[in-house]
Amino acid sequence: ARLTPDKGIFELLRAWKIVEDALPNARLRIMGMFSSERHRAEFFRLMRELNLRNVEFLGFVRDRDELYRLVSEAKVLIYPSHQDAFPLTVLEALSLGNAVVAYGIPAIKWVYGSLPNVRIVREGDYEALARETIRILRMPEREYVELHENDVVRRFLELHGSWENVAR
Image 1 (cartoon, rainbow, N blue to C red):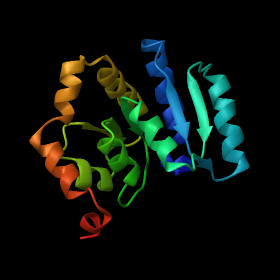
Image 2 (cartoon, one colour):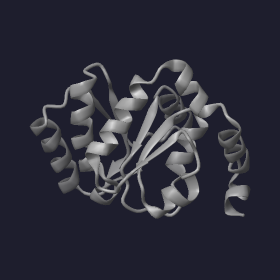
Image 3 (cartoon, helix red, strand yellow):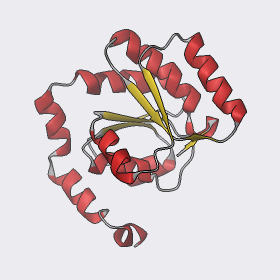
């Protein structure tokens, strides 16, 4: 939702440069709203500076059905946030069949750390973020499916399938 430095938006672009160099056909979609015009200008300046070719900025997607359709088309969510309490974006991506690569902030480690389809890297290490993303994108389909279709993930999604359960 919020595209700010504390959500890792600039590190995401640096990581994506590494991914795009390794996998020239990979595409990155970014959704959300910039908190300031300064952050927006810096984001697009960095995109040009890094010469990123396969980045699509979609802005804030208000229509939930469209949002879920877009997310379900993805293979991996890159989540370089430096702070969060309970990242619903990660839960939504997992429930739509995406793998996740995220910084090892407390909320990610505590809530999602036991899941095989969530890859956690050291906070601030955008190169590791890129490497894990590349591993997932290169993963054979069978191995990728196995990340999601196991009892640990199934139980987690059942438990977190309603806001009432999450709040409990």
